[in-house]
Image (cartoon, rainbow, N blue to C red; front, side):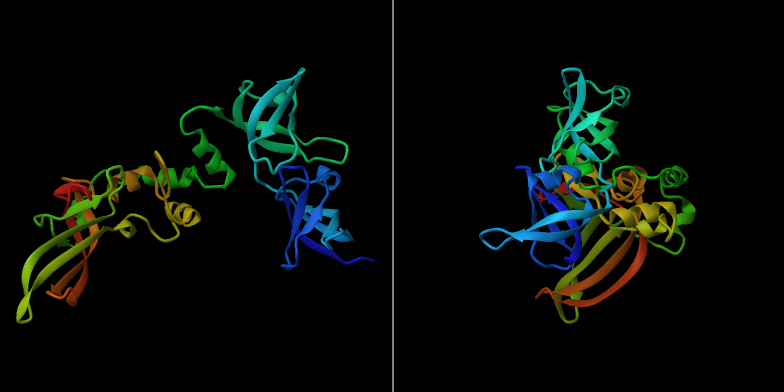
Length: 309
């Protein structure tokens, strides 16, 4: 009995593919006929059946362990009465058949997201249903819509997180200021790029005596998200899934619901915001002489850009 190994299928636009082995050994070549029953990113068991003239291993899939859960994104086409989706990612070597009742509101030529209902087989194409219509191929931002889904970027907040965000205030309340240093009279400012949408940090600096010499007092404030997002809450769990905000040209997929990312936790000019501050004395050589951290309330006096500054 030939040894079997497990791995993930990687398709190639020319019709063949490879099994990327879990054990880190060399990839195994799968000829086009072996690729007919599997799709890019499926998990499989395979074995080596021969070596080619250059001694590269060629394999056969013996078992499909798990079908890739990733939806397929592509263009909906109608060819002689049959509906098909041609995948945008050419590593998926087969078009997906769409039964007439499964196209939803999609129209020919549109970019759609497809959920497979029947995997491919040696003698049959994969079958799926249209899950979401993204729009026309030349719509502005279409490449972003495709990328977001192709790489599984979480772009929708859960109902629980959105419900929790709706319960948050629109502005800083008197009770929120308890135990915080009032810095609202200090002209802290934000400095970001021209097209920045959220303002996380603010700075202020003034000449000061440091020890016996001259230096600076430097305040750096950062929005205090922890005041509004409790550990283990629905917003925290969604944010943990995302890890960061994701920036595309013309679009941001935020880590936190908009009420926080563009509101309460954005140091917008001329509004009070809760922040954490590092208050420092810096000597003339730029060395930090003394510092302290504290929670505060601030009021950004200006939204500057790097160019202006």
